[in-house]
Length: 328
Image 1 (tube, rainbow, N blue to C red):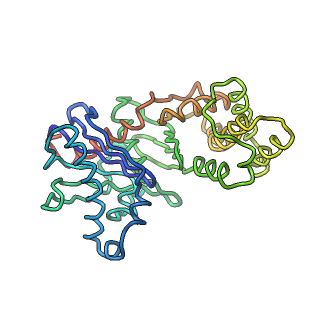
Image 2: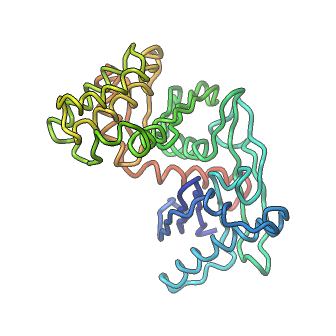
Image 3: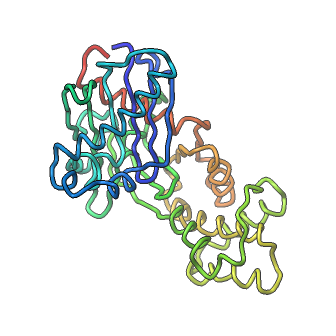
């Protein structure tokens, strides 16, 4: 197998890559905002109630993206295998798969999957990857990223806490090659809701000026203010900062960001003996680096280069697929 198609289908995003198997090089990319939630909401009653019709509905959407790659590259991808991770295996996805329970091996060998053969309606064999659950938490997609990060790092000692920032940030604890626990933090979603829907929205202005000295100072202040304080009370300071003219709306935006990020990361202080690894999209990388520094954790942390978050999905899928196909 020289190539495979890699699909990361999240709640609010769709990403498809054509990948060279030998070195996991991404040859072509298709991205859209048509995530699993929007796709599920567009299902008719027949597709919702008929598993085969539902599967084909989702595969047709992927097929459209594959067709675009074929046309742009001037190639045929018929028969090229497709590997899918993320929310596609959820209750609102193409086929619901049961979660793997902890402990979960970071080599990906014991991951729950489903295979679908190529047919006249969809000319690609499909491997659908499920997620992982603990007694009180779940994840779909980050487990595949974790497999890819560890496989690609080549580190002999993989113990530590792996952080995958996002709408719902995941902190995954790895010990002796096993995921032994993880926690979900609704940092991104809460930040978005406060900025768009709460009383705080009038006192902030979205901007990407974190490197500006004033904005950076306020971000750090927010991180510090999150330590040993009540977040629900402290968040109201964003309102009074604006009312009393203490901060500009741009500065207030970064103060709130720091406050929430500090609340997410503050618990790492009690796990100071474990190394911390951050695998982030580029627009969040500097925020996490800065917050870890403010909290005194940066010396024990490793932030993977920008781009690794995307590549980790591809490499994780490739690693998992190799357990099913000896020709990889």
